[in-house]
Amino acid sequence: MAYVFLPPRTDNFFPAGPPYLSGLRGLRGLGDYAADLATYKHAMALYETAYKVWSNKKKKYDAALIAYGDQVKSIDDAWASTLDAYKKKYDVYLLLYAAYGAQVASIKKANTTKSQTINSSYGLNLPKSYFDNGACLTQAQHDSYSCHTVKGLLGVGLGGADPGCGYRLLPICAYPTAPTPPAYPTKPAYPAKPKSPGSPPTAPKAPAAPPPTPVVVPVATPVPVVTPVPVVVPAPVETPAVVPEPAPQHANMVRNGLLLVVVLGGGYLVYRTLKKPKAAA
Image (cartoon, rainbow, N blue to C red; front, top):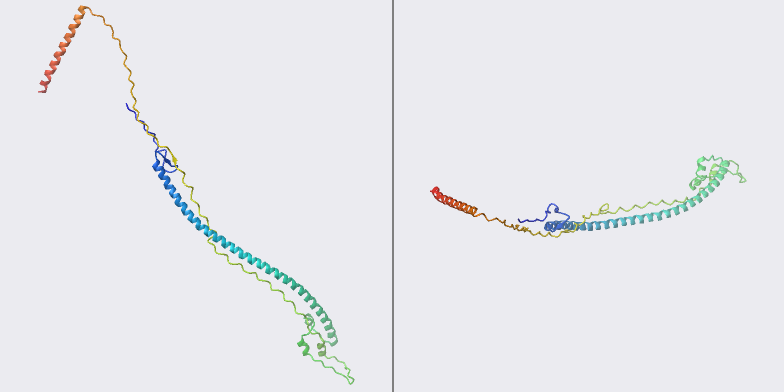
């Protein structure tokens, strides 16, 4: 009997897709790997193009932000310098105003003292507002008054003071001009925020890692058909039994018996031979 030995079934153990196998399923396994590798290369090419676009936008965005920051810094520096100059001017103004106030106070005090004496001598009844406004007359007010003095024969006044003469004696306003405070500087406006390609652009996502390298599985060598050779065992050699010679009478009986069997057998064969054609007819 011949026996055939088949290789083990591997179809259920090596499905398509990674890990990729070559050997028994070499064509299909390597085909899957080639398709996945082509898909990965295509995705990587798209990613590299998108990355270049994003990189250019990012450079423009960063440059715009840097330019904007430089403009703002320049404005802040200029404003700080202007404000510092203003503070220095204002400090000078405060000193001038303090000196002006002291001078005005001194003049007003002298005018008040003089005006009070004239007011008493001439009975002018000067109002409070006169003293509040500096205790003096403007040049036009001073010129509007006239003085009439009544004199006697000897040229001596006879009495009776003229109020006009008293007004003409009041001090004329000669206050210094007040210093002008420096104007507070206006803060310059910041530049418009530069336009950017987005807030900031989002970097593209790289594709997944490339497919793994196929695993090389050696091709299984078919097992040759082995026909087992049956072992021929030689039959045991039988030693013939030694039959003793029959007696002469017994031998004749055996011989006659065998002859009878032969005769009867031959007759039966003749009978069968003749009977078959008759039955066929």
